[in-house]
Length: 78
Image (cartoon, rainbow, N blue to C red; front, side, top):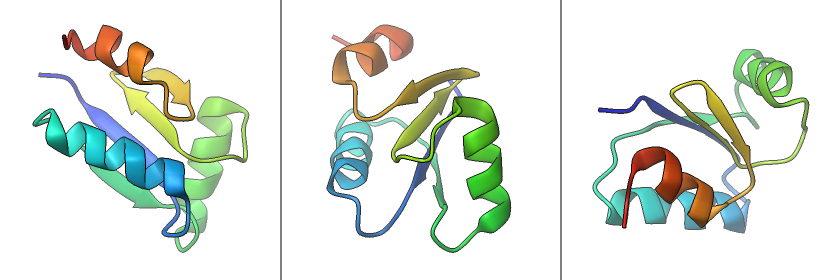
């Protein structure tokens, strides 16, 4: 089972798409609201080098944005 975290904001449409996709696929994930949690926002920037959301961390591999193909590849989804 993979460890999945998503760094997001409540107003980001791509964040909602990414979370909905993970839920649809039955993937458990931890959601960090970087608009409210400055510590997690800094962690996101340190991991990704990016200020944009979503940032998805799958077992330490960072995906910036909602890249469905990369998510499927890392989680071995069809």
